[in-house]
Length: 240
Image 1 (cartoon, rainbow, N blue to C red):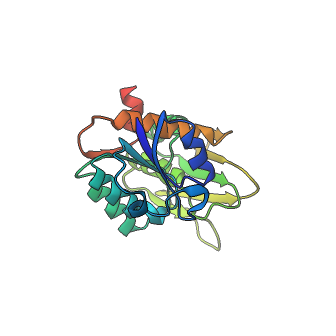
Image 2: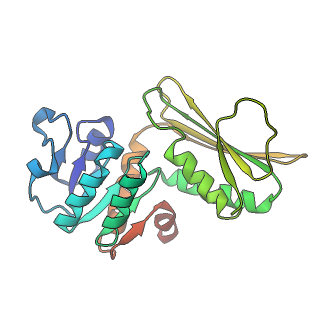
């Protein structure tokens, strides 16, 4: 599989280069190490997939390039604006696009478990806690939002309450989301389901960023040969 890696000089970009059998091209905004600064500079390299692990602002350019090349697209960044999401969704009308707030198969399982727990305890209070390194720029994490959306599938009336401060009683419909930023934490996500008599805690901890590269590789393989459309970790997990 011929891959173009966007964000090639970043930590994830370097890990991704070790996962793919053939690198068709490398793009990084800094242009260091002989890497192309833009997709225009990279040119027509005929990849099978474009994997974007750069910055959310690069998503429209990555999507446009993948459409022009007629190849698949894997988006591993989070924190996209509505305009950036629109560019990703528009590309999915022409090519297969894998878009997930987290590339970990473990997180996909966590989402499934959180949804099942919320269904089993319809009256429980649910809180989501996410912890990341002090360099992460978006909060809540894309993964925390994924977990909230998973719960919302069985609690359509649920509303996200990001952070908690000041006075005010917790409402029955809110799902609290708390974000911590500290040190070099790769990623920890917890879902607390609490009733008056018991509490269930679901937790996933990322021990090495390599798992995200493994997930991106699995995603790229999953969408090869798929028709145009938007794909995610839930579909990958179900097919496997």
